Length: 129
Image (cartoon, rainbow, N blue to C red; front, top):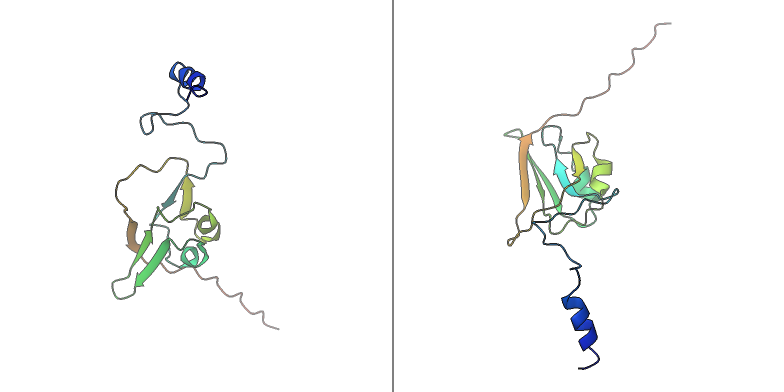
């Protein structure tokens, strides 16, 4: 007990090592990936992000009858590796440099948008001989 007394007294009168998050927010590191964001207007619901996600936190569903698609992400399962951002063909996924808000309940991020067909490349015209 007496061995601990100097450490306790030192810590009582020194500056705190922690921050009062979420009231004090530290600037992110230069390579900080941040929060996952999907620009649903550019999403074509191709499922590449769902297939490549190592933590399987992304779910993409299409409803061809109504012409809508749903993109769902579980932020508590996400490891923020950025693989989904790398494989997205339309760059609708990106990492925002901000912190995720603290939450007492597990809420899913769900976005609904219109399904757009990817632009097809036109075949080169055949040359007449």
